[in-house]
Image (tube, rainbow, N blue to C red; front, side, top):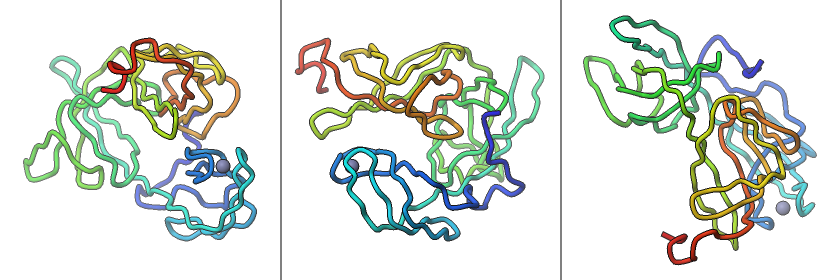
Amino acid sequence: MINGLKQDSGRKSMIKNVPKEVYTECLYCDSCTKHRVLKGRLGKNFLEGIFRCEGCQHTKSTTIQIPRSVKIPVVISNGSTSRTSSTEVEEGEIIMVNDEFLLENGERLKVCSLDLGNGQRKKKASSENIKTIWAKQFDNLCLKVTVNHNNKSYSRRVSAEPDDEFLIGQVLVLSDMECYIHAIKSRAHVVLRGTVEARDVVRIYGKMKQWTKTAETGKT
Ligand SMILES: [Zn+2]
């Protein structure tokens, strides 16, 4: 199943054992890359240790913050009826009206309203302040893509059906560029080879292949 990190309370550290690999920023590669954990000590919400980048083999000693997760009840409206579920998001994550997200069962939802308690409704809030998410079912996914090129990263979106598969190495056609997919962050872990179904994708990382529109229009 997708979510192997289930827990009783939403306010515990997500990782209980020192992982063998982590995905973190490499100053030499200038992007988020896979690092081997050579030595690690796990704190409540951090991992302190020595990490080696698998891209450039540089070793660094540092502390990585591990985001805690928050469990938020979700009320899903369906015509005149509604039902309740819940979702886990990272503490400090900003949630907005019209954000699209997935429940653990793969159901696609869109945020309609955020309830902060005491009848307070907001269009945008940090996850730890949200008491209930009001949502409705939604059909098409809009996936986040980060493309690295010349020390810059570009954020783009790509729409997909939940069953669509994304393959590491494939060319992805975006609004103004084409990129090669080199990593996919899924709900469970970071995928560096093989395929991920769109319904499990959190973010796709790409390397620039080429602009498909002129650089002027592409750099907006
Ligand atoms: Zn590196």
